[in-house]
Image (cartoon, rainbow, N blue to C red):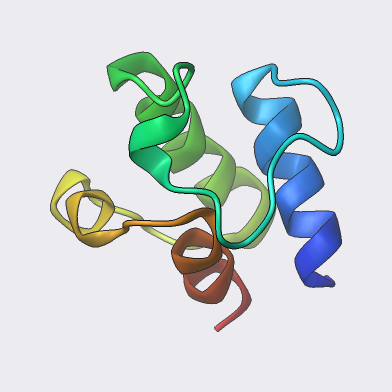
Length: 73
């Protein structure tokens, strides 16, 4: 999956308008990236990528690009 497709999937998961995020977007700047948003991303990572993402790993991510790199690894 391309980086753009992963970002689009993150936008869909967080219910954010399409083309709002990019790889440099800081997670702290995304209002929808609250505790429920983080949980939604964890579930999406498991469902779509078969990747186990923990809350501890999530805390280390600073940008949307960090999530994309994890999911595409």
